[in-house]
Amino acid sequence: MVTQPPDEPYWMSTTPVTSYPPLGTGAGVDVDVAVVGGGIAGLSTAWELARAGRSVAVLEAGRIAEGVSGRTTAKVTALHGLVYARLRRTRGPDGARLYARSQQDAVEHVAEVARLLGVDCELERRAAYTYVTEAAGRGTVREEVNAAEQAGLEAAFTERTGLPFRVEAAVRLPGQAQFHPRKYLLALAEDVVARGGAVFEHSRVVRLHEGTPCRLGTENGAAVTARDVVVATHYPVFDRALLFSRLSPRRELVVTGAIPAAQDPGGMFVTEEGTRRSVRTAPLPDGRRLLIVTGESFAPGTADVAARFERLAAWARERFPALEPGVRWATQDNDSTDTVPLVGRFHPRARRTWVATGFGGWGMSGGVMAGTLLAELIDGRRPPWADLYDPRRLWSAVREAPAFLRHQTGVARHFLGDRLRAPGPDRVADIAPGTGAVVRVDGRHCAVYRDEHGTAHAVSARCTHLGCLVAFNAAERSWDCPCHGSRFATDGSVLQGPALRPLEERDAGE
Image (cartoon, rainbow, N blue to C red; front, side, top):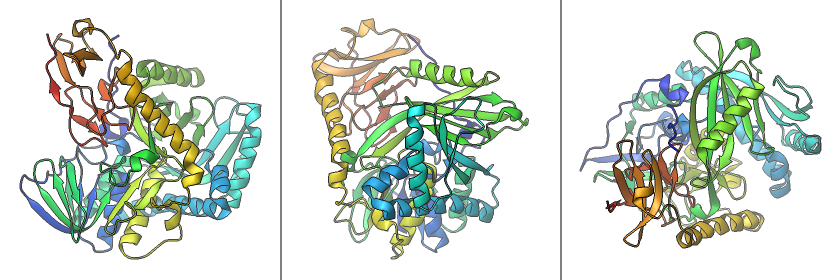
């Protein structure tokens, strides 16, 4: 079935397209710190360092704030679902307290930075809610409230929200925030440049040499020399830390639409029941509110995405009957196997390389937290929560073992099982226009897409990261890797890492 690809996310359609230069072929740059990745974690880190007087260069493979940070729901909150009860069990009360303090500090930091820069990023203070609709979840909510209070947050138990449907119970945390992420991030980038830093777009980094100094190489042969390097590419594009074994990628869908301002539920809401749902609104120029609903989490390359989009849209229409359908898009998150993001030194032997990843769907507060944490670590200071987020933490190995094993079992199942079973149609000729499938051509797995004009385009079906077979995502018209979340366009070019190289071109055999 031919499906329409998702729309341009609202955050991007309401902000100008950036035009920072690429790092030219054969060019060289020498800076104190090179930041790889132009999303919220990378730009926050670069801004903090530039403000501290460091020379900084940001290198982005595409355009800044157009990846995951351009597709977020942009909730800035310390209430991350039901995280505090889990943290209290696995990290103890002190660990939960440090997590809460670092995340709430990030909420306040966004408001302060927006004020300092004088940017109108539509920042609104709202309460955040984690709710349940079934009576069986009341005890879970009470436990979360207790754990969040013990962690130092002003959390409260409530049975009332502004949602247009009944909830059984909810955790309520006042004083949180929501904003227009690209307006905020573009202002950060402009200020980085104003402070003497550099931003390079369309400059994909493909090589990293750790040393004194560190050296980076781009795919077009340009070089960057830096005392410190920060890898903030959402999913790390270098495997030397083996973080791919501790990260589980998942995609999540977003549907939007206008509702009357009087029907604004007046908060930020999430439930972890069933297939998960998240709700917030944003201001529209005509006085109405843009309803933003997310959910339908799934591993890349494993789902009928079009059907999931329809389920999510139906859920939104049923609960908000006045909804006027708007744009839709998809995003991707990485969950760490032990719940806590990985922010700090890249690996046990790292001295001047740093990483920020594994935000688990809470990248707005997490990315801002990472920026301040990494800037302090690079400056030789150590915030009290540095150990909590340290990627080298070995003490959590036992605690994360069940999740680690589940993740590795899933990867192995795809790596081996997808090769053994028939991946799709028997012949390229069976692929309909506007669709794609993995087909054996001359004994090799080929990812074949047939465009609307009937021409077949074939590339290797082996992901260039670690060799898993990709699957066709009909709703987004992309080739997605179910093992580690790399995504490729129908011509094989890289859309999303950790893959660095495109899928190799193949003969479709027609």
